[in-house]
Image (cartoon, rainbow over all chains, first blue to last red; front, side):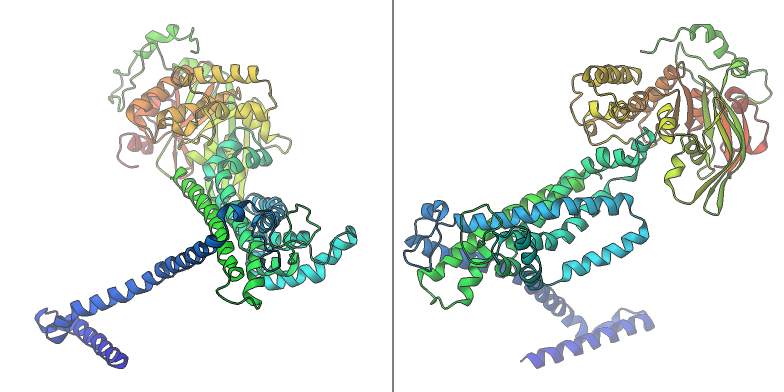
Amino acid sequence: MEDRSNQEQSTKIEGGEAAVIQLSRVSSLEKAGGLWCSLRPFYEGCIHFMLFVCASISILVTVGIVVVLLYESVQFFYDVPILEFLTGTRWSPLLKPQHFGILPLLCGTMLVAGGSAIVAVPIGLGTAIYLSEYASPRFRDIVKPMLEILAGIPSVVFGYLAIVFVSPIIREIFPSAGVFNAASACIVVGIMILPMIISLSEDILQSVPLSLRAAAFALGANKFEVTVRVIVPAALSGIMASFLLAISRAIGETMAVTLAAGATPKLTLNPLESIQTMTAYIVQVSQGDTPTGTLEYRTIFAVGLALFITTMVMNVIAQYILSRVGERYE
Amino acid sequence: MASTPSVKKHMQSSDKTTSDHSKSPIVRPSIPEGKSMRTADELAQATEKISVTDLSFYYSENRALTDISLSIPERCVTAFIGPSGCGKSTFLRCFNRMNDMIEGTRVEGEILLEGQNIYSPRTDIVSLRKRIGMVFQKSTPFPKSIFDNVSFGPKIAGIRRKKDLFEIVERSLQRSALWDEVKDRLSESALNLSGGQQQRLCIARALANDPDILLMDEPASALDPASTARIEDLIFELKEQYTIVIVTHNMQQAARVSDQAAFFYQGLLVESGATEELFTNPRKQQTEDYITGRFG
């Protein structure tokens, strides 16, 4: 069946070429008639349909995932009241007595997201300003591919580096820290989201019109004043959006935090302790021997839904801010 | 509003058109009531504010300006005219060293501002630019409030007290004839103003630095006729206090607002002189061809 349609198609294409050749040679429309002409609407229709199917797949998959998440979560919330889920301060679904309060996981996630933002935001913004306003074109040509390499390093490598490299340094400075601690996760995740902050912020800074810089220079401002008082404020909303996107990436980050931060759901803001994030919990259950269909198993869908909503809200806000930045300078 | 005591004195002289010339005036200056152009005598008597000697300017290897010498009198309007790419904007940007922003540019010759060479290594560019305000073709309000736009210069100059800043903002906006339109919404974003208002805001922003010289690079070319007329009226007001250099494509505008005009062609200063003289009785054929619209 498939072969036949392929064959049909290839003959159609040949026919098409023949028709074009004829057209150009004889430049008569009537000669191009026959079989090809009657098949052309069908052929166009096929192409249209196939492209439509491609485009539909992403919609169907997205809807499917959300439906599965919702379906399993709703079943989970039959057994566990949603209020307990959202406000409970203990999370131990795999141990007796079971507790289903997501706050420790949420706290762990936010601790890592906040900590990595503390690492990445100042360095990222500083780098973006330097690249956009100060750096020579040659230096920029070196840094930009470097950032792409940094962005391409697999997150599992970062997780591994956190354990064997970052964590020992932290324990050297703070002997009370465990092997697995939130601080090392914060640092490596911060480095992971750095390329994103830098490239987005730099694009935004570059998009501030040259005329604005010229106007500020003409008023007697020096380079630093132009940058700090005109360029950065003009680009501020876009820079904020890049922070939000990067933090949303940090929230969704899985492998590095699973390896570095440990697996101890804890309602703490102490970065030296071992914690567990929402993503790390999902890894723990997915790869473990929790039987499917049980309440324990369904927890990962509820946690997944919570994670999905958190990152989606942040992405939507960031996209909204970015789209408004675009309007301003047109 | 800027007081203009000397205006009345010159009233009669503005009517002195050049009917005795064999050529009829090509563009007849239409001057707002109560304002006047400087006569040739007044121009000759005016103090020299800026003196340019043998100035050449290079964009890397390309010479954009060749051996230009020109004297710019104080409290007069000097207009640079010429076809696109003739170097008039480049020349204007030499006065406040805006060309320094472009890499690979080079200047030969000198520009003396009240006797001091602005291209000497000892010149402080920041204070130079505070003395020489600039208004660009495209209005460039910062995405800040009206107040913050106008107070930008004074703030970076170190003025912090709100009361002082407010005084400067009010005075500058009054001088640029924008105060009445914006006095109730100083904290609104400057981007909400109309094009003409934005351009007057940019003029106010330049005036807030209290410069002696105002450079205007086609300040009205992006504006509608009504806004253009307001800017031109403003130039008449401002020249009582400031030395103004204006680049314009619009011959009528040059004839209307300027006291002295300089015609540039292919990086050369072809001819300069009192505006009336240059527009009614040009000495060079090229100048005449350009102002009569035969090329350009």
